[in-house]
Amino acid sequence: ARLEDSPKPAAPLLVDSVISGLKQLAVRSGMGPSHWNSDVGRPYYGGRIELAPYKKGQTAAFNYPSILVPRELAHRFPLDMYVDPVFQTSDAAQQIRMRGFTLFPRLQHKTTLLLIFSGQPLSGLWTGLRQWLDVVGEDFKELPNTQVFKLHCEEGWFNRRTHQLTKFQLRRQVDESEIWSTFVYRGAWKWEYEYALHLYNKDLPVVLLLDAVGYIRWHAVGLPTDEATQIFRSLAKRLAHEKRNFT
Image (cartoon, rainbow, N blue to C red; front, side, top):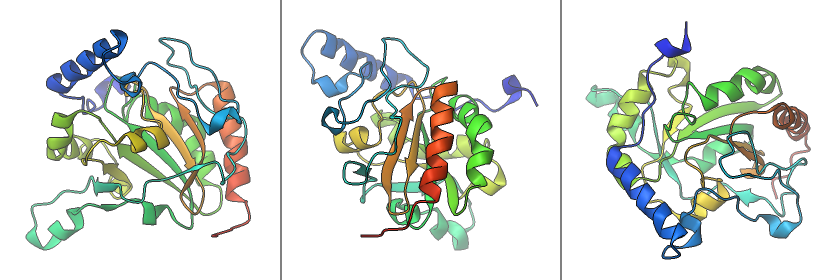
């Protein structure tokens, strides 16, 4: 199958794109808060951990560490972040399975590769996520006690309010085996989510490596590079064999 024959990604709505552009204009004019700016890397860990640098307009992976972030410095996945499964049905008896739930409990007891996408051209199931999974996905799945999740997150208010349409589009794109591991976030957009989950550039995919208690121990924003994927493989193997410590 050819990539151009694949289903089109669930792109953000035009209204949300216009609002996003106005926010960026406000930042450049000094009238908006700095966290509206999606074109910058954010400081993390008080500068104690070196992260791959970012240059304006860069699409290759950036903001990733070369080590596992120690748990005492790592961000925990938000406890109150509700997501919906891509699964949809008109069967009334099955509709309870469509209800949202907090993702954090499902991140327990396994090493998790979480890929976050917005539906933008480079941040879609068949673009940025596919590139990462083609390079690291199979090796990661062969590690002991691991799981792979995909999460659609888009800042735009209208996009989140039309999440049913997003779910419908995504449902047509994912394999049957992935309908319970592909999720859509439709709740309020919180700055603490954006910061902890590295959602500051919606044009690019986010890759998170979480330990068995839901802490983000490695992260990258952008498309895979040889260096980023080599580091990921090495650290994912180390994390999967890390002694379990649930304190």
